[in-house]
Image (cartoon, rainbow, N blue to C red; front, top):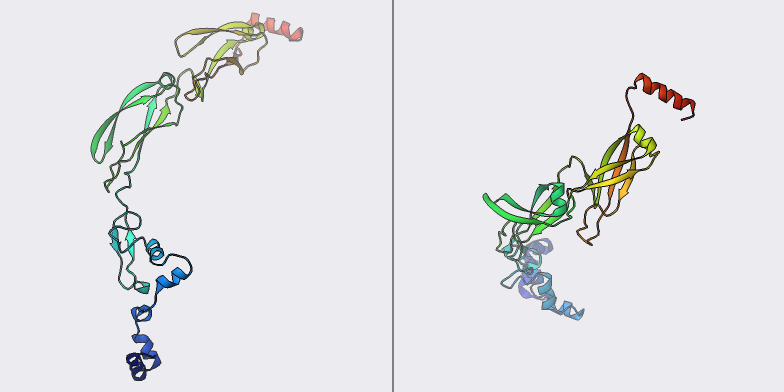
Length: 261
């Protein structure tokens, strides 16, 4: 209380009243933060500037617009909340596109129509050969515009592959089912196998094959989108048992049973 004015206030209001009349500005008016930070090698004013994002400058510490907060912040500083700056891009948009199995293998091009901010947008999308279910294609700059003047968002096309009546695809392999008769399973046979390119392959089924056996046709699957290698085709053989037998067939089966079949 070396200050005569503060001594007078202390004598007039007492210790409690004196402290109530003191403001934060009074307490820290002669407090040199810069010298303290400098003693610790923290750069004085530069350190304070970095902490508070250059609040005294024309732009915020993060390059955005500043919004001044309520007065009376601690230590007499004016704090600013940061809002998104002009470099923030617009929102991305994701759409689903269903294509046929043949299109996923050969590749195709689709014209997509979608709504963006109440306006109808159209864009052409090239589907590469060998694309898999669930993969996403990115079209840069075709998403939502940025409300802050930045780059627009991107458009992502998520691929769905429609079910096929004959084939089932798992990654780069193709699966299908072929039915044969009991006699063919016992004696062996040769069956025709369709392919997606329109050709027909011949497959020899060995005698005694068990139902639900999968036979592989090498390199008859889908060409990989990444390394160019082709997958395989798997033919599941299903043996159909007769639901009814003629009297003659029944006698033959009984004879076979007697012979240990």
